[in-house]
Structure formats: structure tokens, C-alpha cells
Image 1 (cartoon, rainbow, N blue to C red):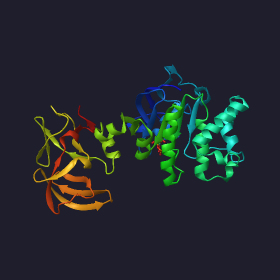
Image 2: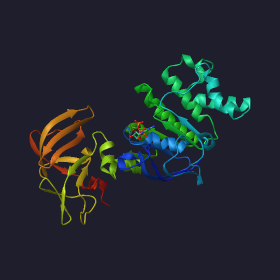
Image 3: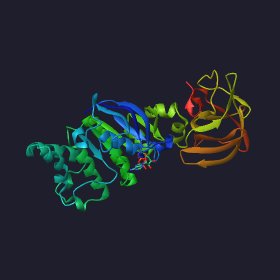
Image 4: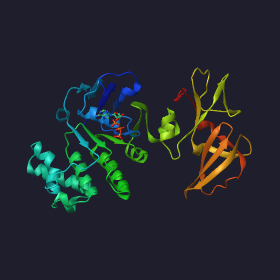
Length: 354
Ligand code: ATP
């Protein structure tokens, strides 16, 4: 087990770089605590796999360093780093039995037959593979094979970090939930540093204690699921996390007052001056209420999801989404809304103004 530190990491796949777009990763610095459960969350192309491959040693960063327990491992290869990596698709030996697949990493490290048998038994029980141990791996379903891959990563006790790169892609939707809860349970049991890469917010938020949100090669926020939901530090986090995401509305700031569509808005963060090229209000649909006074809006559409209603409205400043309980009576035509000040934030050039 190890603490993982990334220091000013940047990576480009190009020989020469002219602008930000030429970098797959830009100036990443972060500390991942020993035994922590982390998720790397972001859309396709934001740099998650590049970062994971740099941590595992499959890729050498263009700039910066990787440290395990404060020891610089930037130039070490994956084997020297003692890492377990679980990929999107199962990596198993089809011709071997389930038992032999799980035993393989342990045999390679010279463990005795007794030690191997007890480790394999333990991990097979955790992953509910016990009844299939004697079967050939080739006969298993995609889910079963991916469970073996997970088991092969989890069975070793000498690994510094276990890394998962979108491991549930091949898993049936209803089984995803089961395996995700299982992984969380496994983390609590075996207490290793785990880094889980995904573009799926539910996977990230249910697995990790701390979620690292990436956007265009940068880390835009690291926080608990609640922190990311309640106080997004960047408009991208507001928009990417939540369903529907945060409303991001253009506003003007004059003499410390925030103005949206001709209305004065009270916000959580106080603004003294604004020298940004763009200022925006961020307010989640959950924190907007219908009222007698406030911002005049027109109801455009109401979608009932069973548990909630999502209401699309239009006003002078832009379009606003509102989320209410399914039982809430929605006014028709023209009405007013108010923003809950505690969860209304002002952003300057996409970053929260602190
Ligand atoms: P995905 O979820 O689709 O795997 P990701 O967040 O993991 O995306 P990366 O695969 O790390 O993102 O890609 C980051 C950027 O680097 C992208 O612009 C991608 O096109 C580019 N890239 C990735 N691998 C290579 C490569 N081998 N050669 C050149 N460019 C690459």
C-alpha cells in the first residue's frame, strides 16, 4: 500500500506543443492518501487513461514526477512499481480454470501452495466465484470473466496501488450495481489504495470517498460526492455532476451587485470586483423554488420521471431548469422563481469566485 503523489505532471503525445490543446495532461498535482478510495471522473478524452498509465508506469510523463510513499518512481517500469491494473475488458487465461487464473499472480511471486489456496479461497468468496473455481474460464459469461480480472488484481497483498480503468463497461446494467457495491465492500475489507477511472458519475460517486474531476487535461476539483454536488468549484463540475446538471446563467456584476436578466440576485459568495471576461451564476435545479415574486419565468415543458419533475423554463436572462418532487403542483404559463442563496454561486471565467 502506498501514498501516491503526482507533482506538476504534464503530458503531450506530440513532439512540439503550441497551445493547451496539444497537452493531454496539464500541470497535475495531487496527493492520494494510503488506503484511500479515489475515482478519476471526466468525459471521454479528458486524460483519465493517460494519467492512469503514468501512475502505473506504462507511460513516462513529458514533465513532472510520480512518487510512491515519497519515493520517486517516475522512471520505474510497471513491474518495479508493484501495481495491479484492471482494464475495461477481461484479461484472463481462457484455457485455465478459474482457480488457476486467480492463483497465477501468486504463483509468479513464489507463494507456497497453502498460502495460494487460502488467498484464492478468500478472494473467490468475496467475488462469489467459489462455485466456479474448478470450471474453465472460457465457459464463463463476460461478467464472470471480468470478476476473475478483478480477483487477479485484488488477490495480491504486496501491491502499492490497485487501479481500475472503466472495469464495469462489459457488465450487464443490473449487475453493475452489485459489482460496484462489492468493490466498495472489498475496499473496506482489504484497505488498499484504489484509483477508479470512469466517465460515469454514479460509478464514481458510489465507489469513491474522494472524486477527482478532470476536464481538458486538468483537475478541476477534488472532493467528496457531497462537496462536488453542493459547491462545484468549476462550471464544468456543476454541469457534469447532477441530473440535470447545474444551471449556468450569464450575469453582470456592477458595484458588487449581481444582475441576471434585470433582476438582482443574492449569492453565497460575495463579489467585490469583477475583472473577468465572463461572469456566470451557478444554481442547481434542486435549489430553485416557485414563488409569488422573484425572477419572472415562462414554463416551457414539464417532464415527470416518476420521482421528480424536471421543469424547463425561459426568462429574459436565459433558460432555467428546475427539479421538484413528483407531487409538487407546477404552475402553468407565467410565474416566478427564486434561487436558494446558500447554493447560488458566482463564477468568473468558469472558476468559482472565492
Ligand atoms: P476515454 O474515456 O475515451 O478513454 P480519457 O479521458 O481516458 O478518454 P485519454 O485516453 O487519456 O482520455 O486521452 C487524452 C487525450 O490524449 C485525447 O485527446 C486523446 O485523443 C489523446 N491520446 C490518447 N492516447 C493517445 C496516443 N496514444 N497518441 C496520441 N494521442 C493520444
